Length: 182
Image (cartoon, rainbow, N blue to C red; front, side):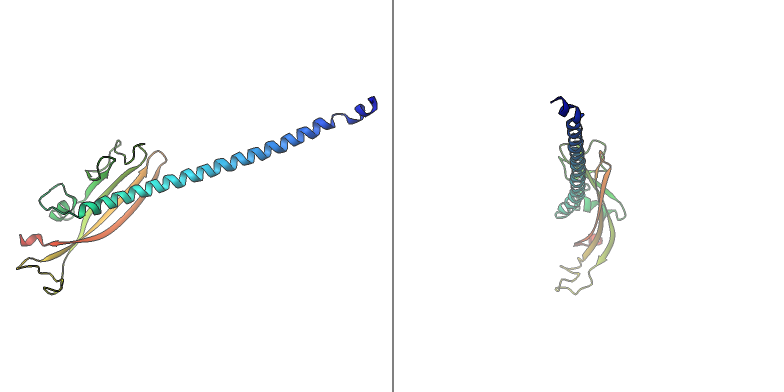
C-alpha cells in the first residue's frame, strides 16, 4: 500500500486542478458572451427608442397640421404660412406634443427621462395650383385660390445618457386658401 501512494505523487490533485481551470475558462467565455449580447440588446433598444422619438416629433407635426387655424399665432402652420422663412421649433414631452420652442435640459419624452424629441419646421415653397376651376383646380369660389404650401420638418430624437441621436426629415405639402386673397 505504501508503494502505490508513493507512485501517485499528486496526480489526482493535478487532474482536478486541470479540470477546474477548464471549467473556469468555459465559465469566463460564457460570461463574456452574455455581457456582449446584453450590450448589443441595450444598444438596439436605445436606438429604437431614439428613432421612435424622432418619428413621434414628425407625427406631432402632422397631427397639428390636420387643423390649421390661421388666426392662432401659436399654431405651427399658421406661423409658418404668415411668416415664410421662419423656422418653428417644437418640443415633444410626456405632457405636450406641441410645446413651443426647442427642448431644454429638462424636457423628456418618456417618464424615465431618457429620450428627448423635437422638430423644426419651415415653409420651403408656395405654389398656386394650375388646374382649371371645377377640376381640382385653383378656384373654389369667386376669386379665392388654392395654394400648396410646401413644408420641411427635421425631427431629432436623442438619448443624452448614451450619446445617441436619430434625425428624420420629412417634406410635405398642405393645400389651403391663398392668404393674399383675404
